[in-house]
Amino acid sequence: MGSETGQKINKELWYALYVRSRHEKKVYDLLTEDGITAYLPVEKKLKIWSDRKKWVSEPLFRSYVFVFLNVADYSVYLKVLQTEGVVKFVRFGGVPVPIPEKHMEAVRIYEKSGEFISEAQERKLKVGDEVEVIGGPLKGVFGRLVEIEKKRKVRIMIDGLNHSVFVEIRKSFLNPVNTIV
Image (cartoon, rainbow, N blue to C red; front, side, top):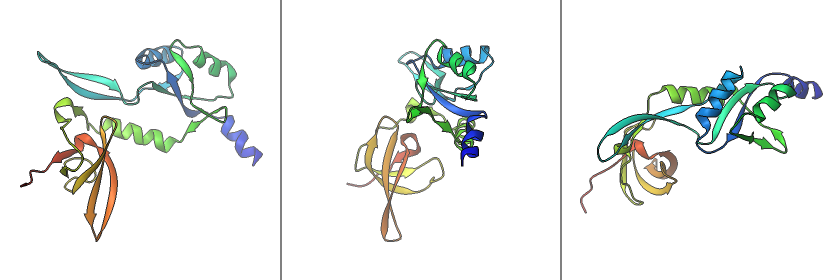
């Protein structure tokens, strides 16, 4: 058991850094300039103003940048912490928490999927609406909106096989179904 812990500590793994608000790109640039492997997943969004439209890249996870390093290498660990804009490593029990490679790969796949959101797609939905899933793995499924979480996530109830299943899905993947009232 001790050798497993030693192996984990003495190898490079992915870690999440909590950074100052709106400093993600700057922190990413500074880390890569210092030769540290960093990753800033972004998504493209179509911003719509009254006079123009523009595609912009925004961090997928606000206030977070990922780094690939050996935290046992104190000089690198300290260099990361002293980077302008870095607040701290994400920790549990006082120890930086490594992120499994499979989770990082899932983020990379999502980022490359091209499933980007335009503000026009952010439909005005309300609890109780009948909806159709128009994107993602549940495309074509119908359900009822039961909860709106944060800005872009919702929970829908899908009836089938004589029971209901609750799924969390991106708001942009839903389209209200015209129903006769």
